[in-house]
Length: 118
Image (cartoon, rainbow, N blue to C red; front, side, top):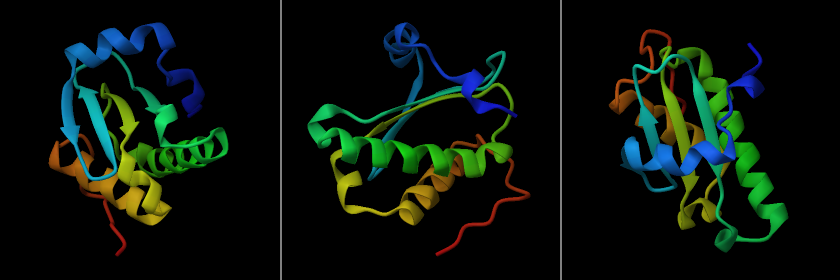
């Protein structure tokens, strides 16, 4: 599956944020909707968190954590992830586990194939 085809357009994001459910975690804020026609996603790292190199690194980490768990996500879920200040002091493993736990708590993934490493 080519996940590039399922990205939000920049013009869609602001209206989506007002209409979706919101979950705050330690490292990011997750906005989601269920019962949508197909999977869509976006990753946002605000400029106040650091320079372009740092933001690109954290965006790559969020994308990879999402891609590794994308086969578990139920169809019709649309997700936007916005990074928080504390993402600066974390690593990929913690980001990945936090994303999986958040998706599990909100019942957005299939739990039969779920394995979380500590």
